[in-house]
Length: 412
Image (tube, rainbow, N blue to C red; front, side, top):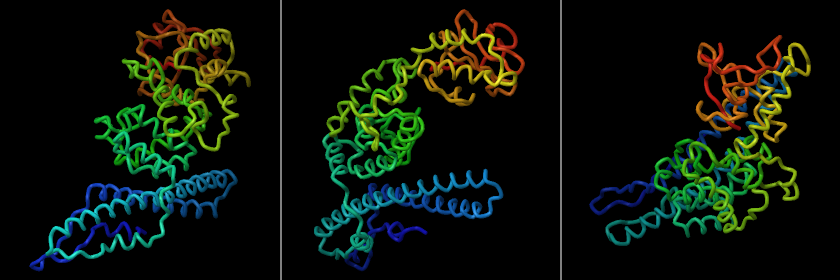
């Protein structure tokens, strides 16, 4: 059920002289804030509906496997709903302030027109008695910082705090990323797509609040916090890696320095963890992802030592194509996905003419789907685990069937 607050967005004033009623249109800030509240309420309603269905299915689940799967779904949905409820409270506060600003503007206009009799806006009265908590000191500090740099994100300090804390990410770090990527959203193209964090390529968000949630969820998810990436240098290796094709000007080389500086200005410790609930004493134990491409030659040499290893069908210690790539990179301290689809999206894409030792080379079937992977050795040769009843071996990209099935390459 929608909140009554969200259902009455218009601010009504008294009759004009001559009997005509005036209903000023909400200011854009009110419209955006109201849209955020409605969108979040829809997400809460959807989560509640799905949660009810899962609980119903759980009560009649026929097997332990299904029970476990449903319990996991239930836990995730409940966690999601909790985050959304907290987010809704923040967005309601933002809407309250936006409406108060509009009410003040209306009052000033009314004072200039003696024929206009002001009345108390019903929505403002409702919100004034809602008992919503005031923004905390950290939110206020962030807003003050953003105001000083003339950022369009000013006023969203409470959103940074709510979404950051919900995902276990220091809100100040999220702000710092926006500074490094788009000068806190002042860069024109980022404003057109509400994307101050460089998420992409070219991801559009419906509002600044939605972008903040997207960045917090990304940082708090499996790619960063979940992978043990908790410091600024560790996060840069994945967020803004050096030497990638989409950074021809080398701007990523400034990313860490800029994030360090902004994070420090906001009161953070650039040498510590940017994830909440993680002790700085554990930083040395966290995995460090090497820069992209630096471990390829060593991985290729390790792969050569595995020539002759059988497939898993012939030996419990055997390797398939994905396991071969994952294993040799694991030996170099690079954690890669354990699926073909995961390997095909990890790292950066490499053109055929730019292949280097250790690059993963992928091959497609007749329908175009990726079906096999190997590691490039140089000179047109690659090493791979061909499949059942075959052992790890070297093959040529120019031989059949690889010449006609080559699809792409990735560098890790």
